[in-house]
Length: 545
Image (cartoon, rainbow, N blue to C red; front, side, top):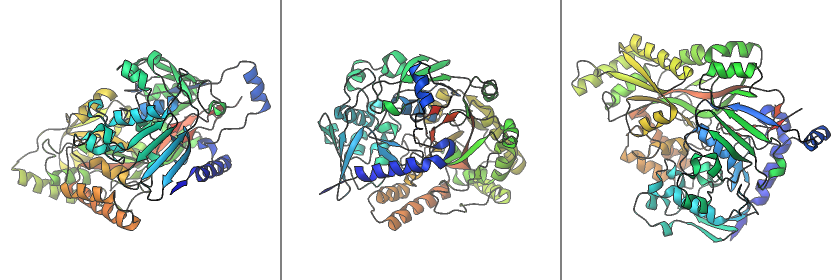
């Protein structure tokens, strides 16, 4: 027996739209078209939203994307079976009806009439192809593990199974059948994530470089890419073939690619941009007090963490006590009060407040005495009289530099350790972390959905795509795997908490703070969806005249 969940999801969508009127600038509802706006549209006046990306997006391919900038662009030019609203809840999108078996392991997605941006029909076969492609080891997707929930997905990706045994099949052009390894309550949240987006099978098979230039990129989302001048600018225009094109009010998104945050804010102040700051860039830290004082800064908490990863295979961080010493000696309270200044929450655990099992964290902030003790013990275990040289690696950003300098100073004063800082452009930096060419590396993690597994599974496998620390633990892995089979929530939470305790005891990362997003925007800009996971969506955006 199957249950139809479309009615329930539609009701949630209606409720979300009703509540959105109280939600200010993060509303997911499309503003009703006024007579004036209709008249302006009839006159041919274009609504152009001007934005800035702090860095060039590494890719526009949903199957290999792994960063916020690429994700924002992909979310604009692609669409999934479901799409999240401003609360991070999945709503029906390309799938107009979804059936779920009573055991929660089989999903049947019934697709609506939809097209690619080149006018070709979008079919269930494109979804099947995209998911199997992301799982193919040859694709080298760092997010392939997000598809492990599908039966046979992990086995194929790890070379232990066959592609034809993966539990996804297009039974016809409009029907996609999916079988999961275990019941997964958040599966419809996953189908709104970009690794689950379709790609145009015919295009991808005929051109391996299809996602590198605007002229060859074909999507199925609210917008289509019409220009990409690398490291300079990008243009997205309304996609007339989008299934829900009637709700899209913005005609064009124009992105500049200015790396300097101060220049970006000046462009906003001069009327050259409609938005400055997160999630595609940052507000300069020195500008935050003034923006707060004049009430133009918008700040919103999100389920994301700022941390430093430690390469557990490179000295001195191949010793757990030394890793803990560096983590304990960070004064997070001083950083959020004196450096970032936007309401961030000091992090003494790996899970954000909305997911945390241990709200107070696992260690005391700025515990220099314990840090000194652990450092001495760790050095003795390793037979060292002095530490090897230590380098913090960051991606190019004035804000990341200031935070790293604060940590550098704290370690010098608290531990007597001299630390150097190096920076790299974003794409180069990502490659460096993935290849293990670092000691301490700055990174953030935005939750893809509001569940602890979203953080905990990151470190299940040593080479698990976004692990980067080279840390793994057999018991940790067993607990994570067991949690994915457990249907009882209390028992599942207990398994995940035990896994987190192991992680925090061996500590391959240095948690610094839980993020807030801060930005300024044109007061006439309405309807931008900016959910609790930090995902931005311009589908429902509008510029009032």
